[in-house]
Image (cartoon, rainbow, N blue to C red; front, side):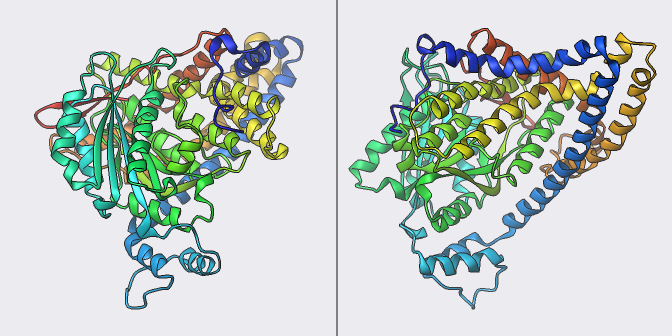
Length: 540
């Protein structure tokens, strides 16, 4: 497909068929939630068998997820210890430097042998990084540490371009801060610029339009420098995102050894730990759970998609006309845009290094609770991609392999339905048969059986607890030792946060999509990083 065929249709352009697929996720979700009640009226034992089978399936699945999480954490720690700069030097030279006493993973030697037989377009020294930082009225106290984290990278800033993409709408309150930061830090980069995004009526109010406009300005600059876009790797960051010091080196390595970088995206691991000590306990549980899930996804390439901070070659961004300006979930949607633009020849490579982000923290406890729901609701709006994938994949001319398309579509649909229905089914479905048929023995015994299965499954929480404690940043001096205890006790909130936030946000988004009540405004999530004398706020 060409880049004009991969756009999401405007609301008025959506056919009945397109609307049918928008309704599909919510229709299946509500059917699954209602089904135990309906079947219990006719034959409660069928419901009992279904629920036990479902719980056992999730018990087995939880074991696999916890194993994956521990494997992913171990891999992430190993990659943090690698000397990526030395590995890059050896890729550049085409041979191992025997004088350098460093740990070399087995895949490094394999990459060297493969590159000798099949050279790639550009060597590491020829690559340029562009960092686009999207901001919406954030203060200097939020933006400056993000820029500083890039400068603290073990990478030559003469090969890094900084772009601060700030909004022109709502008063452009970030303009002064953005210009000041470029003035102060710009000279330490290869090039730096602040780009003001003028809002258009053809765009949703969201991040996609902002970074797309900045991307086009970056393209103009590269043209003046006669720089091949395939040499340029673009990473998008939110204002509160702080990449690991070795992220740029690791990204350069993976890009340099990739046989076909044009058709690849690169995904680091988002970790919500910047202000984790300051966030309320429910938000800490949700943030840690999200970090936990991102670690798991890094080991599941068949399910890995662009999320939050991600990277892609400038050449492929130009080919896809950058990010969509018509959806509030431009990150995950970018995978599908690229997938269809290249007729299925696209995949996401994991970068096993963290991008540190903020947990949700607003001005008050109740506002924080609301802000957390809004954030997850926005993520859950990714269910809108079901209709997009069906339309572009099955009803638009393309050369995407059918089996691959069917598998990806099934995973997309199943993932959003599971997101919505799994928590309430696990938590409450065992009580339904007894509620409707209190005299049926199997129905009465089901809650006891379910409780025992769920009790054993709780062992998996220890894996989450282990990772959460190991990934915590140092405790701020303003907190006493007993704060460590709260970091353990907080996990009693897990069942509540899973149902009230993850599940309800997904149900809410899918239900709105069913009735055509579109989320066409990127509701920013206000976050904060406390210090001993002030609170810095960000909006994401």
